[in-house]
Length: 25
Image (tube, rainbow, N blue to C red; front, top):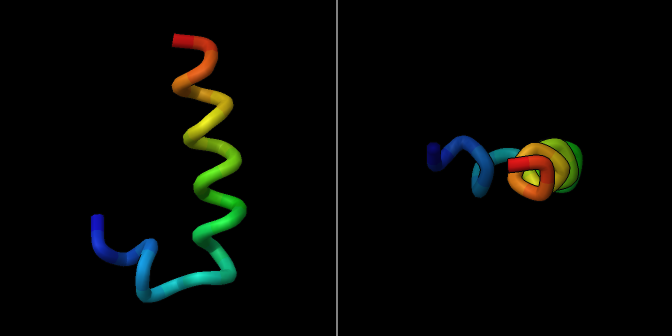
């Protein structure tokens, strides 16, 4: 999962989605 560091633009979008998923769990 090191693609996040390679895509800083997608990092924000993926981080937001992941955060919401973790919050639900």
